[in-house]
Image 1 (tube, protein in one colour):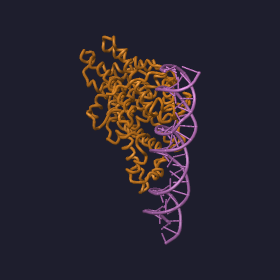
Image 2 (image 1 turned 60 degrees about the vertical axis):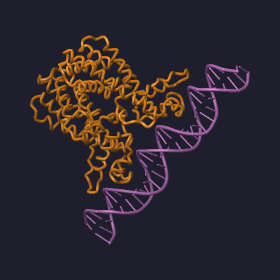
Image 3 (image 1 turned 30 degrees about the vertical axis):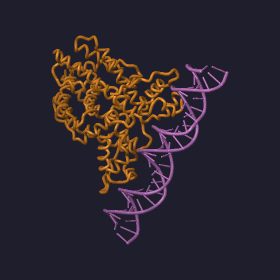
Image 4 (image 1 turned 180 degrees about the vertical axis):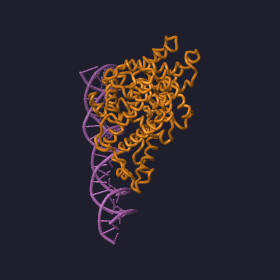
Length: 206
Length: 206
DNA sequence: GATCAACCTGAGTTAAGTTCAGTTCAGTTT
DNA sequence: AAACTGAACTGAACTTAACTCAGGTTGATC
C-alpha cells in the first residue's frame, strides 16, 4: 500500500484552484464533455501548466474522487462516534451523508458517475496510486456501514441479515440520490434526507 | 416527439452483431476504455463500416441504453400485470428486475454507468433522437414504480408517503446493484434478489 | 545578486474518432 | 445475360483534444 502524500501547498500553487474549477466543470458539464483546456482557462493558466500539478485529466478526476471518499468517511466517523443506540447512529449517519455543500454535491455526483474507473488498473504510477487509494477508501466506507449494521444486529436492535449485502444496499440507496438531485430542482435536500433516513431505518431495523 | 424506427434487418446486416459485440466490450472494458475499432474487429469488419450502422460510438451506446430501458419497462409491465395485491405486485416487480441474462447484466451496467449522458443534448440528430427516447423511457420506468406505490397507498396497503421520491429511491436501490454485481462474484443474483425484495417491502409497506 | 525549485509557456506529437471518395456485392430489372 | 440499384464495405485522409518537450520566468533563500 503506497500512501498518497498530499502535496503541501507552495505559496504560488494553483492546485486547489484547479481542483475547484475541475469539480465545477466535471460536475456540471460532465468529465468527458469538459475540455481539459477549459479548466485551465477558468483558472487563468495555459493548458500545459495543468501538467505541473496533475499527470493527466484522469489523474485529476481520480484525485477528486479520492478526496470526496476521504471526506465521506470522515463525516461518517464524526457523525456516529458518540451515538450509543444503533438506530440513532444509523439516523445520524444518513443525516451526515446529506449534510453537504453545493460543491460537495458536485463531488458526489462526479464520484458516482465514475466509480467504474476504480475497477480497471491504470498505466501510469501516479494515476494508479490514486486509483488504489480510492478503491481502498470505497472499501473503508463500505466497512463503516456494515460495521454499524453488525453492531446493531449483535445488540439486538436490528434483525439478523447479511450485513455485507444490506450495507451495500443501504449505501447504494443513499448515494443513488446524487444521480438525479439538483440544488436548483424542486425537491430540497432536507426532504430527501428525511425520507431516506426513514427508509433506511425501516430497511434495517424492522 | 420523434419516434425511433428500429431499422428492419437486411439479410446481410451486421447491426445486431455490432450491438452484441459493443455490449460485451462496453460492459467489460468500459465505454471510454474500449476502442471503437476493437468492436469492428470483433465483428469482422473495418472500423469505417461501423458508420454504416451508427453515426458514432456514442450513438451506439445511446442505442444500447434505449433498448435496455425499453426491456426493463416491458418486463415490469409483464411482471405486474396480473398481481392484485400491491405487496405482491411490488415483490413481482423486484424479482423481474433481477431475472436477467448475463448479457442483460452487462446492459444494465452500461446503462447505469452512463445515465449522465441523457442530461445534456447532443449535436447530431440521430444521437439526439436516441437520447430523447431514452430520457423518456427513464421517466416511463420511474412512472411505473411511482404508479405502483400510489396504487398501494390509495388501497391502504402502503402508508402514505411522497410516492415520487420513494419511487425514485426504490428504483435507485434496485439498480445500485448493477454497479458492483458480477456473475463471477461470490454472491449469486438470487440472494441479492431476495434481500432487495425484502428491503423494498419493508421500505414501502411498513 | 546568484541559485534553485516551483511554476509556466508555445510549438509540436499522438491517438482515436470521424469523414470522404469511391469499390464490392447480392439481388432485381429489362 | 447485361445493366442497374442500394446496402455494405474499404483505405486514406482529416480533426480534435489530450499530452510531450525544450526551454523560459518568477520569487524565495542563501
